[in-house]
Image (cartoon, rainbow, N blue to C red):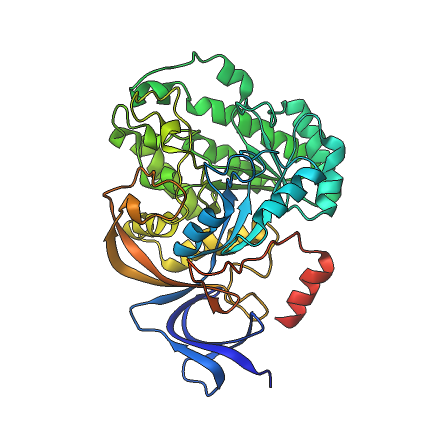
Length: 456
């Protein structure tokens, strides 16, 4: 019998089949045994959880902007992964922009890995970028282990990561399909956005009017048809427009290889509650009306929207224009790594969803999206990544207690349900201020996936 390093006895645990009382045996960082709660076993360490906590698989956040190297004053690997661990997240996938250089070449990927090495409290993988000039780089980045490729269909505001046209998107999708990879896309239409007047205003309603749903809807339609024609797997990032849900559902029913995510801010906030000058809540696409939020929730419940991830997009406090309150000039992004689970759970339970639902949205499906079969599930053969969660505990958000680099949040003062008590990475408790033990992960090869299935 395998010698166990750790046994966790959990009266409540979320497994792929639902909630169960189990004992979990861990050896060499992997789950090797799942048995009855009181099944006899011995290990070097045994942890017994209380009935007021639930053992979740470590969450997987596949949409995170870590701005190191180059813009480390916005956010770095050490602080971002500390915030993630505090929020029950054990795996992040870093977006290819907001750092310098952007991850569009092999040299840039190497720079990212060098910057991250030894600084990560959780495991970190990387998306590559697809821009107009690097089509030939995509196979090389794929071979180097990126988990897929991101593009924008609109202006990004940065010269080193320009958006692509719908015509170039089709070329990217053809390459992605040939590689068996994934295309992920910020779907807002450049042509529709260019027709809107630039706003400089303290009124949130004016900012919202400058980014109407139609800008998203048009771009999403273009993504759908490119995916249909190419056969590529495509993923819509940070959906905010609920009006797009019917065409997304229709495309999926037609067999288009399409998936969609949304974010905690679209599920927890509403335009009506964002006051004039409250630029801390600016994000793009924008937070929309409460009625739109409820339709998004319906899409999540129906499975049209399959996952919920943070789009953690950090910046310095000054970049949020707190003095002027100018929504046009303020940075568009919300930092929520640490709060994503309690935010989503607080809103989900109000609408009759279970913790098992939240685990599917925030652990199992993001892991599957990124091709990380050994993450996001409590199952034999998977990494022993866990979050110990108290679903009924409440707390008031205090920005001073957040671990991302700058305590900037639109959730300050909000009462949330659910507290992460401990987080485990490969069977070891994460010490937020100890030596980081996260690893840099790459795309799994078919042989690695086959081995994981065999061990399960």
